[in-house]
Length: 78
Image (cartoon, rainbow, N blue to C red; front, side):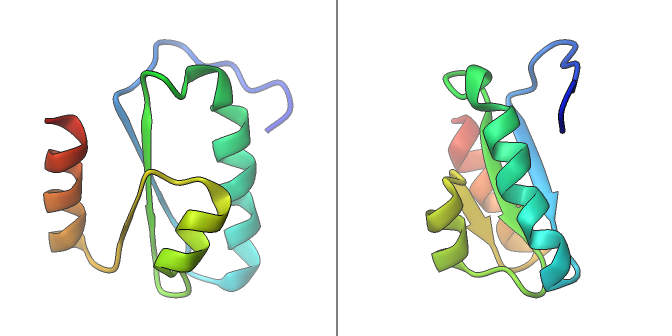
């Protein structure tokens, strides 16, 4: 994430992990987006991800599946 260049700021960033080994990158991404956190919400999910993990790394929302992600995204952006 070092040297990441953000062009424009989205309203919502969705992150998904398939393996536990990639979950650490979610926290790094959230940290990299810290300067924009007033305007951008972050939702995470994926097979190994839990609500507890989302809370621990500072995500705004967690979704266990795609249908829930849509509902959570609508709520975050309302």
